[in-house]
Image 1 (tube, rainbow, N blue to C red):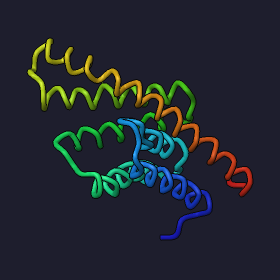
Image 2: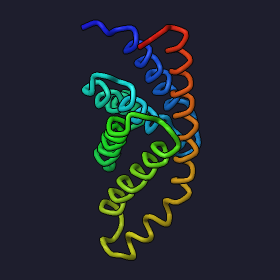
Image 3: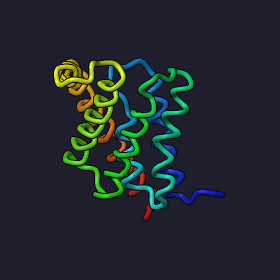
Length: 161
């Protein structure tokens, strides 16, 4: 099934972002949260919006590796895609909300899998994750801006709907 011009541009931006995940980067400074929000915001066909971050993760995890936390991480990206679908925009609010969704869901998964299931275990898990959250937010803002402004520029130049 062929894609229309808009979908081809969207997919090309997602592919570039995915390739960036394979390059060396600081911990949690990665493009997938931005890809999930971007896909949810801009893909008209919501099945593609949902599939894009999942395919991005599967394709890169083949090289980077899977772990016990992988299902929770994938679920986090589905939730972030839902943020894009629901709010239909990428702005600082939806980007930070997406960062928060990933932080909470992924760290709940880490807590359940690797920490004592106590209030102290939960507190320790989330406290130790704060530096990663800062990196995530910075990466999410950077990659979201790159995708958003890059797509807007391309859409204007190519006169996409």
